[in-house]
Structures are given as structure tokens and as C-alpha cells.
Length: 252
Image (cartoon, rainbow, N blue to C red; front, top):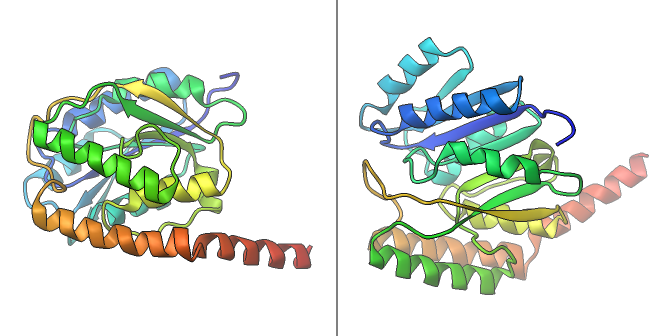
């Protein structure tokens, strides 16, 4: 990149006390190499373990670290929406606080953020999960790409770098994990430039997945159907953009 961009890196964290400190410190070290203007934000989504204590100590020790505590769990989507709304820099990078991705690999994404590209999405070279999660994950990928018309190779890879200006156009509403589908669908439909970069995926070292249980999968299925109704069938977001553009044209 011809100019060093300012970067907000944020992590949604839920019961990630065993991994979040290493993620934050790795992000700080990586950002120091890439830019002079950066911040690290962690959204603690009502964790029941010692995540809050770890984060408060990190914020005390590192001036570039900012912590936002949700008193109660708002869901993955709620944590992401808080993170996006709280970011102040030109670019936003986010990944999960469970250390299944390596923040060092932000260095792979940043060079791809060139003119005409608004989002650089990671795709997992190989998924380091138990077999049942790999199978469910692949089925999930096929379903959402087919029904939502998504063109990305890996829609649910939560390792992304994007321009903050995207959110001048894209407004997110989901509180659950389907927010990733909502995000990618709205970015694609808005015509933003996207590219993908291979990244590594690691075994979970602490805690357990909040997604892969049958009750949660049923809830995700219901949320996906509601999202499909709004975004694919009724195209509510496209109609809202058209109405907003019409008002802007009249005002100008």
C-alpha cells in the first residue's frame, strides 16, 4: 500500500479468558509493524469466566487497548455490531478471541487492500476442527452460498479486514451468528469490491464452541430463514438504499 492506513482491530470475546490475552498482545505487536495509528478493541460479551479480569488488566497495561463490557450476553452478532460501531480508524480488522486464527496473518490481508477493494476476507486453508464440525461447516457453507447467492469461497471465516466506510452504507441488525451472512450479503449487494486470502485455522485451545450444538443449530436455521426472507425475497436492504439515494438526490 502506498500509504499506511490507520487500523482498528477488534475481538468479540465470550468465555475466552484462556486465549484473549495472547490474541490482544499479538495484535498489538503486529499493528506496530503495519501502521503508526491503531487501536485494539475487545468486546466482552457477558463472559462468565475470568475474561473480564484479564481484559481490564490488559487495558490498564496497554494504552492502545480499549475494552467494552456487555453486562449480559447479547450474542455473537450483538458483539460484532458493538465492535464495528466502536471502531474509529480507516480500516477495521476483526477475528474471534478463541485463538483459532493468528492475528499475525493480518500482514497477509493488508497488502490486498488496494484501490477498488473494500473487504479482504480470509479463507481457511484447512479447517482444524473435529470431523463432525467440518462436515456441518461444509453443509452450512453450501446452504448459505446457494440460498443467498454469495460468491465468496469461505463465508464463515471470521478473519476480515474492511474499510470502515462500508458501514456508511451497510447497517447490520442480527444478534446471532448469522450476522456473518448478513454482512457478506449486504456488502456484496452494495457493490463493494472484495477479495480473499488463504489463512491458517487452528485447533481450539480453550473453551468450547457456542455454535455447534443441536439447540443452537436449530436456532441458526430459524434465523437464516428469517434473514433469507428479508434479504433475498423482500430485498429490504436494497429498497432502503434506493429510498435513501432518492432523498439524497432531491436534497442535492
